[in-house]
Image 1: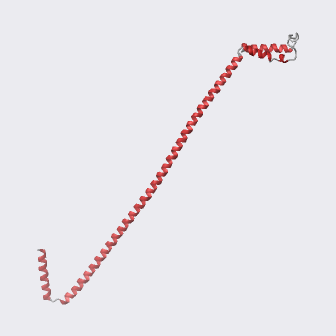
Image 2 (image 1 turned 120 degrees about the vertical axis):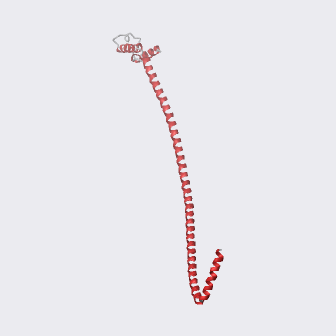
Image 3 (image 1 turned 135 degrees about the horizontal axis):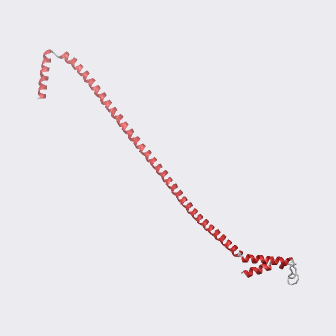
Length: 189
């Protein structure tokens, strides 16, 4: 490999590109600048090879390639991790969305049930109030009937007292009282 690099270096020198014939005696003279440039270039290449610069350059390039490769792998890993996190968040978002929809549906059902229960409670309250009102009306009617009967009795007793007081004589009164005492005595014993 080193020989190939040396051959390429020699072939690519400005001296080789010169139009002069390299086999002429004037080319190999130190007075020829092309020859000096060729010798300097060959010395430069030899120094580079002596200190292992091509190996160091390839090592640096290999290290750089390894670094880039590791960064690419890390970027891929981060990308996969980001995809996994994104998928996880999307699942969580979907779960939260479904849960919120269930909560809303449950709240609607509870609202409907509460409304129905309120209607039933209202109907029952109305029925109780109607029943209580009917009871009060019946009680008022019974009281009114009782009051009318009592008044009728009082009027009848008053009228009977007037009639009896006009028709009764003291003897018939005494006989009537004796008959009433006997009747009470018979009923009580």
